[in-house]
Length: 319
Image (spheres, rainbow, N blue to C red):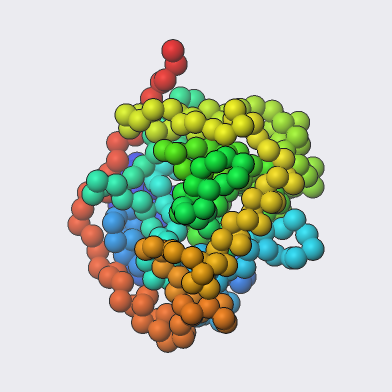
């Protein structure tokens, strides 16, 4: 079986599979004009990392160094794509590693893939995060009465394009869902790529109901069930699963951005979160470009011999 076919069967990010033929362990790929990504390690393995560079070619932390907002006067935010639509590999920003590369989540020593739950295939949106946000695990959210989940805030991008792992896009915020994951607040923003052909029609959460009927219901159902095949109970939601509007979502973003600022200024307990950055001038965690390069180059890029295959199974959870 060819290496490409093996990768396609694992449900790994499409971009990672397509890059295999041009990357021997370490390679570069254009994400946007302002940001580039560089691979280290073998895709679909525990040593795979996707590092970020700015337009000048210097390593940066996508978590800390990419600005939250594109324009302070508009509802445009930077979104870092972690997981392309229809794929299964749970890719995420490594918040506890220096320079915060994207890697595949590992649980119980195994790479994690989300299950296919009828009628869905993998993730049903381009899934990612907003930089410079943090859901503080020591701060109880006033609206949900639960503490944060210790991660940047998540984004479900509902546009028509299938994006690539590591892309940085501009999104319009439309609304938000409050998932309660094992007692923690895990906000899920609903957004659309500002460059989507239909973006001009979307301004708030009601526009999703109008122009993409059934999508919000599918989103709620997906988050409710996605852990059930792993033997866990259905997830719960604040507000009885109601999607809050754009104004509410923007307030949540503002709050999580303030928590991130406190984290980067060492004004709160970040625990194991790695705050190393190269561009936040008044942060005590700021490092030089040379130090950032040294941190990245210390990461192994040698091939990993572990099995990358993950059997594709459909789960029918109808009652």
